[in-house]
Image (cartoon, rainbow, N blue to C red; front, side, top):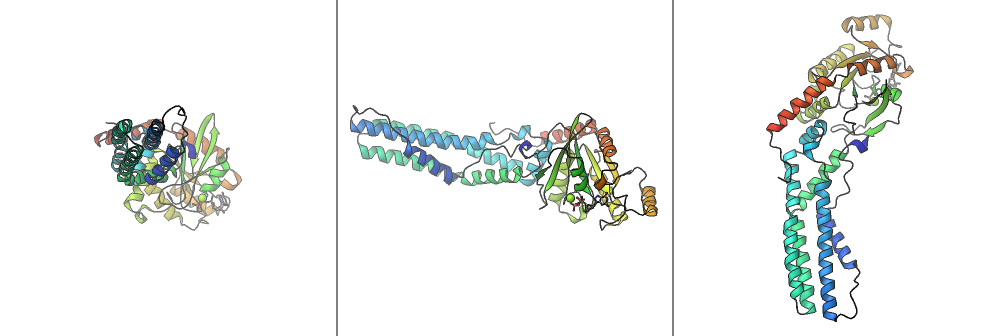
Length: 358
Ligand SMILES: Nc1nc2c(ncn2[C@@H]2O[C@H](COP(=O)(O)OP(=O)(O)OP(=O)(O)O)[C@@H](O)[C@H]2O)c(=O)[nH]1
Ligand SMILES: [Mg+2]
């Protein structure tokens, strides 16, 4: 669910130039209600003061929106935090958020000084110059932090593409070579319309399905382009992004196509299984033989000998699907999940973690 991704709820952020333009437009459009009994000079004074106040107010609102609208890194689910670290760099992100946050007090300073000057100004031109000078200096502060704002906007865009997850609801992750039937299974079991999400390093969209098994609300994640080829074919960053799945997967369904119609031999598939097994030490893994309808009996026998623990399924017909789902729920081992989350948290407490307000 996209909206369950904490990064997809962030309101739209403006770049430095957009903020300047937005605040400027707001400030010149503001309507004055000063009394006609006032002298022209006093009316001008009120107008210039109001315009500057309006400009500053809008700049600050937008800057605060950037900082406060961003999910608090200290409260992120480890899955997202780990990916933030890999894809963005948490330190760089905190620095950028901190810099934007710190640009607010100088803006207040400039505004106050120039408001004071406006109150004392003796002629119309001086007022106009003062107001313009203030807006110019505030714009300079914004421009000086423009790269930080751009960095935050990019970070948001990257993170918003990730799949949304329901933090405490059991999550099944489907793995296996391409064409073994992962999507078929996800579609077969999803009651609600599956949602499309993205995962780093694959251009393919990830499908997140939702279902209810024995009163448990369960989400099932298809992983095209992720857990579907040997790790040796991946770079370090990809491997780390894949490893972040351990915080998400309460249980992994590893699908094998013993008919080999998928284009991969049984050996290749078992090798990939062993790799996934090594990578997700704490996550329970269920092995499923799919496409048993088209697997020649002797081939199925051979596969069963190699992996006696495997369950059998015909995903396109829904045969064996319910049983697998029940098994998956049973295998959901919240203890090991908690352990890996704890391990993660103790690891990051050694990294330097301060909230940006520190
Ligand atoms: N005979 C048979 N065909 C199946 C079964 N399950 C899936 N298929 C077929 O296998 C092909 C691949 O299925 P998908 O569900 O797209 O496989 P996938 O694992 O999602 O593949 P990628 O998205 O490329 O990783 C499709 O043509 C399915 O119709 C099954 O149980 N029996
Ligand atoms: Mg698929």
